[in-house]
Length: 297
Image (cartoon, rainbow, N blue to C red; front, side):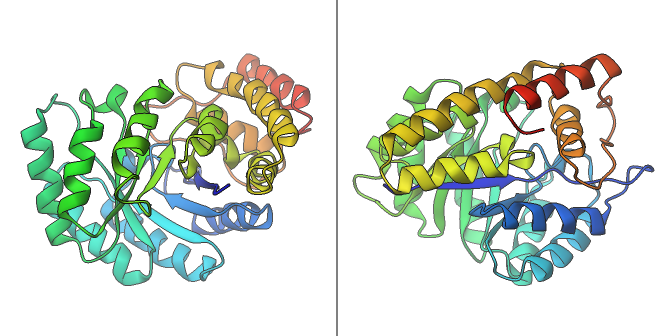
């Protein structure tokens, strides 16, 4: 079956909270070496909300050159100021990114009419592939299957979606509504544990965060799906299910993901931008236990 796993990569920061370009390059090499299908820069785990435009542009330029077409590169280009979103999207595409991913504007809950206007206008202004990003827990509104179908039917450059919704039924609805007429439209789940359900339902896989510290697990699951090896998929699913506990260690999971990467040997500072707090000693021991139980250390 068709299957991909894209890593929404963390953004390595130095001790002063600035983007550490060399540490990020090490992360990309780690992911590529463990057979990930692609890398998303500046997703939610990538702390897009806390990094300046200048540092984003610098890392985009350096990352695209360093990855050098070894895997697919998408860039999260959301900015609450619309013109900045357009500017960063076109910058990423000009630098060689394979596409940009944009979450809908957050803070206010928006009606479908406003969401359609936002993405209609954005798609007209962006000169390349655009992926939608649906995350109702963070935006306060939902991109429904009907709304997504309307956007895809209007814009050839809207090519996919990351659907970060806690019920697989929502993602399945997108697959059934959109892919019937537009089979090349990519539908990714935003939760790791939905990978198997997604591809078995006809979706494309997931864009999900466990692969930052467990890319070997993620790529093994992808290989099993492509080989239609249901027994191996079952084993991978159970390993993923155990690793999902990482998201419950602390109120915010980005510091937890970064600490897990360090415990697996990644050379980086486990620093996050304000207001995220680093993992405590107690949390670190819980992360260590989860990794041991998952046969990762």
